[in-house]
Image (cartoon, rainbow, N blue to C red; front, side, top):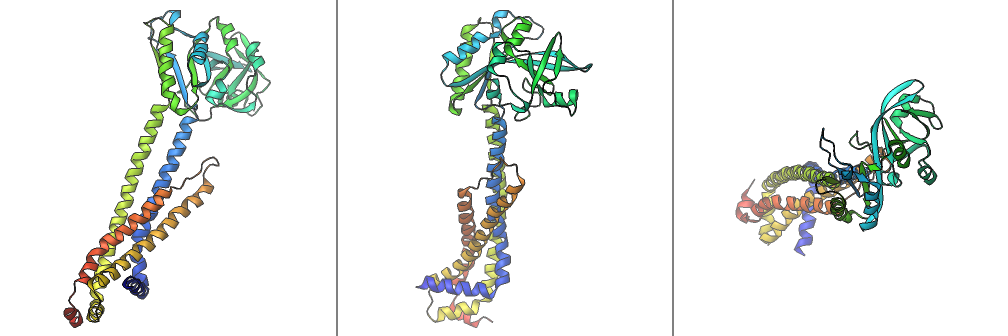
Length: 399
C-alpha cells in the first residue's frame, strides 16, 4: 500500500517540476541511446568487415611453394595437377579445389601494348574466388577440355584497351597467341594486387596455358572447406599431404583467411569496449546530475517531509518515495534513449548498401535499461537516505 502511495507522490512531484525532470533525464537519454547505438554500430561494422573478407573466398585455404630468390629449384618441388587431384580425393571436408598458373606478359590490342598478367585457371576457380562476370560469360566445360583460345579480362584492362566499346567477341594478342574475349570480370571485393588477380589480368583455361608453356606446374592450389570449422583441419592436412608427395627439402606454406578474420573480430571487440566505456561515462555523469537535483529537491521539500513524518510516515516510506522519483527519471530517460537508439539505425538503413542489414541487439536494449535505472537508483540513494533520516521537529521548523 505504501509503495502505491510513494509512486503517486513521486509522479506528482515530477509533474510539478516537469522542466527540471526533463533536463535531469537528458544525460540518461544520451547514455542509454549511446549503449544501443554503440553495440548496433559494432555489430554492423563487424558483419560488414567479415563479409568483405569472406567475399575473397568462402572458407578458403590455399597452398604455395616457398621459393628462394635467385636460386633455381628442382621441378620435383613444384605443385602439380596431380597434387590438386590428390587434395580433393584424399582430404575429407573439401567442397571444391582449383589451381592457377600465372606469368607476366604483354597484351596488344589496336597496336596498343600494355603489361598484363596471364593467369591459367582450372575448373572450380570461379566458384572458389567468387568472380563477378560483368559482361559475357565464364569458361564452360568445352572451353576447358578443347583448349579453346578464349579469355576473360579485368574491367580495368577492358576500359584501358577498348574504352567504352564492348570487348566481348574482340581479339586480344599476347605473345604469339591470339585469344577471343568472352567476358569481362572483377573480383567480388578488391584485393589490391594481393592475390594473383591484378588490375590488368587476362584469365585463360589452364589446359591452354599448359599447352603454351609445356608444363603442368600449378603456382597455387585453392581448396574450399565445406564448413568454417573444417578450415583448420583442411589447412593442416594439405600441408601434410604436400610434404608427403614432395622431397623433404621442399618447403610449402598453407594460408587461410582465419588470421585476418580473427584480427577483424579483435579490433571490432576493442572498439566496442571503448565506445561502451564512453557510454557508461555519460551515464555516470548523468547519475551525478540526478544526485545533485535530488539533493536540491530534498532541501526544497524539507517541510513536506516533516509533515509526512509527523502524521506517521515511516523512514522506509520516505526513502521509497525519493528512490521512486530517481527511478522514474532514469527509467523514463532510458526508455526514450532506447527508442532513439533503435530509431536511428532504421533511418540510416535507407542510406546503406542494399546487401547490408543493421542488426539490433536485444541484449544491448536490456543492458541499457538496467544500467540506466541502476544508475538512477544508485545516485538517488544518498538524497533519499538523507530525506528519510530527517527529524520531524527540525523539518517542521525549516523555512
